[in-house]
Image (cartoon, rainbow, N blue to C red; front, side, top):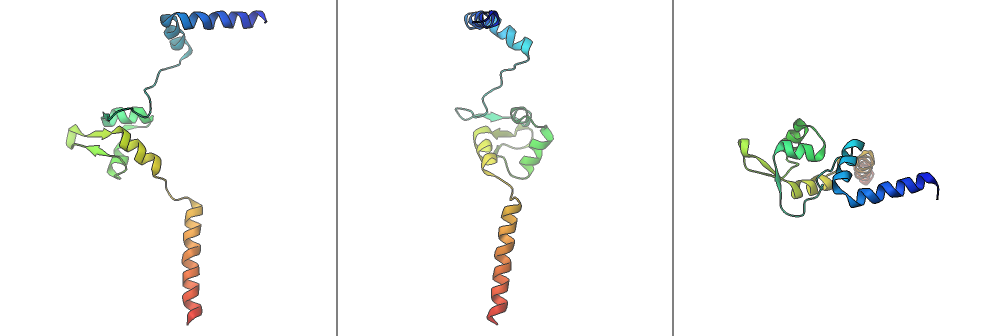
Length: 119
């Protein structure tokens, strides 16, 4: 092994041995521990917390809530978002793309053409 490979192996060994050193190295390298994106048990977030979890603005989360795309509990200032249900709903919801629109347009055109030819 090269000298550099030996140095890297030693550094990695020290990081595995010392949690404080590992945490310091993560801070220096700019690596931040993020919470898991899918919670293991039922969890509720405020609008701010959910926005931070998704990495979007609070306004975007408020828009998603207004569109009915989030599972919300409570009202007024005590609104909480059901994290697991909302993430699942957002994963399943997709906006129709051009292919879906084209397929629908072709289907409608065929139906209209068949009505014309029957007369």
